[in-house]
Image (tube, rainbow, N blue to C red):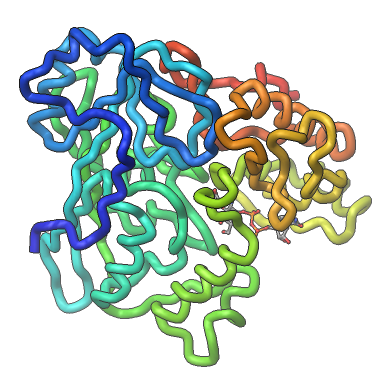
Length: 375
Ligand code: EPU
């Protein structure tokens, strides 16, 4: 099997890199909407889709490629009103069964495959492991960047290799997990946003179910005799009940990371707030940002700075856009300040934004709130 069995997730706007047209001479009068799920008012001077390794190689030999921003499905992105430059979108598709033994399969999946469609397809094939990661929006190429995770699983649990174009060495490379720097919503790809363009990932999946049911009410939802398929369906039900579909209510998933604080700070906070959820974490104790936002009364609020974008009424960690195509990155910042300051004032904890913010030159902004969230 070598062709793509999954749906084509590529949005309609944007231009494939034409073999005959030089990217050195883009059409200046044509702005493209930036593909992203938060539906801000946002466009880009030139959006180029790269559908093969040959196109990727050719593009990165041009001068214009130097500052080009790479976007995938755009489901974790906070773009500005206008990016004055070039955005490239890797549009390679395909799922390939590379090898198998009695217990495992190794599959290669191209960057523009839709993540959820992959989870559904793999589970139907009897290739198990991804079921807890169902219904996460976005494309495969972005999944390792923020090490997507949900319900006790992260993509790092399955990654064997990440294949990418290295913009520094101008070569196609593969990185094994030890080189990927995976951590909570983090990786070497997130830390070095201009360096690699991910083309494929290789996953090792299991032919034998190995269910992870420890998170929240997943076990209850998955039925008396849970199977990978019933877990997948349970995750879809749980997520659909809490998380907005970006096609109906634009959003980019969890807007803040769950903060990790010291044991001493967690003890002081739980003393004052006995119902506050806490989780063991590397380097301290993880708090639930959604709970903190709800506790300061901002869940579902559309007051003042939260009029255009605010914490979703069913999951406060998700910022939803009430004015698609009108609200801007500036409105997102205003909304963020409102939330982070309220949480800090009450709990002494700064929330840190989780999505990727981009400036008008197409550069990733490392510190979108101006180090406000660092004490
Ligand atoms: N909570 C509230 N009020 C809220 C939201 C949450 O009290 O408005 C409480 C919940 O009751 C629960 C705790 O906070 O006790 C955790 O909530 P939940 O299980 O919904 O998960 P989360 O920590 O808010 C994280 C991920 C999600 C992922 C879920 C499930 C981050 C930043 N977010 O959310 O990932 O789906 O766990 O594993 O780690 C994403 O990254 O975009 C994303 C949606």
